[in-house]
Image 1 (spheres, helix red, strand yellow):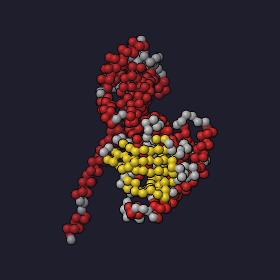
Image 2: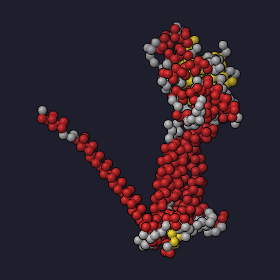
Image 3: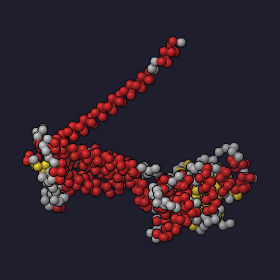
Image 4: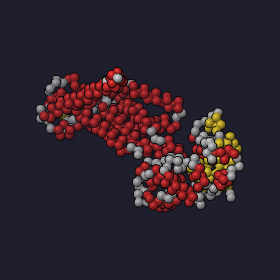
Length: 251
Length: 300
């Protein structure tokens, strides 16, 4: 397996407070990696490093190296905007923009020049199909995305990221705000997407991690405790701490 | 036993306080309601008496252009046109500035810069309108005279003064509208590879549009109702403006100029009341407009 993202000795501080204490973690192409751990363990913070969303927070310093294939993600001449096109992100809350479904999904495409209409229509259809939403919305693409249900809105958010054709998709607890049925639909979607994309997701739901991920990384108190195949982590973890967490002794 | 019964059946101290508080609230609401209704009634009866008692046609009042109440000529069209002229022009100039300042305050400025601007804007709101009028008279009117000839009094001078006056109103309401845009819109847009500027004009301004429109309408309402500062620079000639720098008069300036020189109950006096009624109706229209925009633009 070819790693698509490699990170070494990642340390991150908010002002004087160090939130990540040196993390080495690689991600393989076309795999789903789940980041698990108790609240405040640094897993979301780490995830947000991968498309430089932490740049938006004042007073954050990040050291260590991040590589997307051969590209040094934090090099001075790296174009953040271009990086974020290759490493897309889906957030915890569904975030539909106050515009039509079509405009939402094509948002990222229209940022880069003026693509022609046929191309946009094809991409929107393809992305909505990949996000398993096409059949539900194909007849009213001009409807406001705000009128959709929470689960549909989250799949709009996913389709919007897919439309840009990133290499990697980051997901920060993508189903935590959704009901079980919508969550299950999103999980199915993820398993389909794995064929073409690399997915890294933060989740609080350990059943979800076992259901969808190939690899699992367990974080605690700003350290990466253990990262291995999901089966290994949940059946036979190497560290006692991991065992305690997945068996609900803390967290 | 009797003691307990007593305590349970009689209103407690807290209940009495509650009743008293409610009484005071209802009284205050009642007083305000009576005030509003009597103002409306007063202006309506006075404003309409010209049409009923003096036999002036409403269409003459609204569409005729000669204003000389002493000779039974009460065409208010010049004032209506001028009022709308200065209001629209002022809003047209002020809105882009207001949006730019508001964007700077919410998206770009460091916290201290934003706070400083906030103070400046509040200061601008607090300056009495007579001072704006004075500055308009001393600076704007001569400038107009030099640039465009004529006397310098007119719609353009009025619009420039009103622009400064409504700028803080529109700006602070626009700031509120921009602040109300959920911050996750920004994150989601940036995460899709949008630049900061693309995020602002494609998502943030779009999401804030109803709020910004409300801000503009509020600014227009203020401009429409402003009397003193406008009166000082408009020229006060009740004739249809033939260009932006010819002396004219707004509804408000005509009122303030004329009301002291007329006798109660006579046609000239009634005609001014009709102007007041028109202003009141416009204020209601602006209010309804704000409500409509708010209802249409409500997110979710």
